[in-house]
Structure formats: structure tokens, C-alpha cells
Length: 87
Image 1 (cartoon, rainbow, N blue to C red):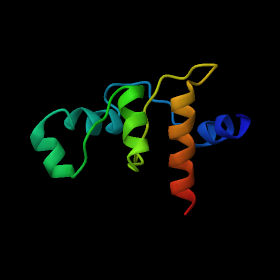
Image 2: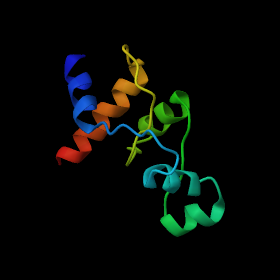
Image 3: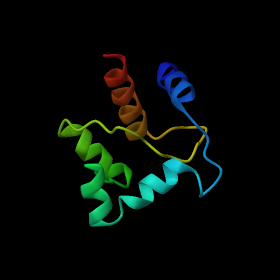
Image 4: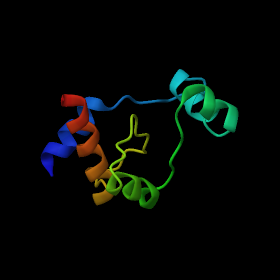
């Protein structure tokens, strides 16, 4: 919907460098030590993210490539992240 697109635009930060602190932090989640230190884990792929959302797990951060038409699962995830941040 249009609301989801507006929310995505408001929450979006464009990352254009691999040296960006967000990218460095996410890369650290690929190994066990990084996950344990941060108390976080990484979920990749729309199917896995959709399953996590269905299980009641709302992501803290969503990284995705911008596209004109957002996938329905991505719209659902962005809406859930928005709802959580409003509370």
C-alpha cells in the first residue's frame, strides 16, 4: 500500500559503502562470536524473514535493495517494524 511505501521512505537510509558502520555490524553477525557479543542474529531471505515475523519475531533492522514494487512479504515486514517503533 501507499502507507507502507511512505513508511519505508521515512525509515530508509541509503548505504553506499562497505565501510559503513551498519554494514560492518551486520557482517559481524555472520560468526558465532559476533552474534554472542551483540545478542543478535541475522536472518536472510524473504521466506525466512516472513517465517520469523509469523512466529512473532519483529526485526530490529531490515536491509534491502530498493525496488519500485516492494515484495508483499517485505511490505509486511516493514509495516511490522513501523508498528513496533511507534509503540
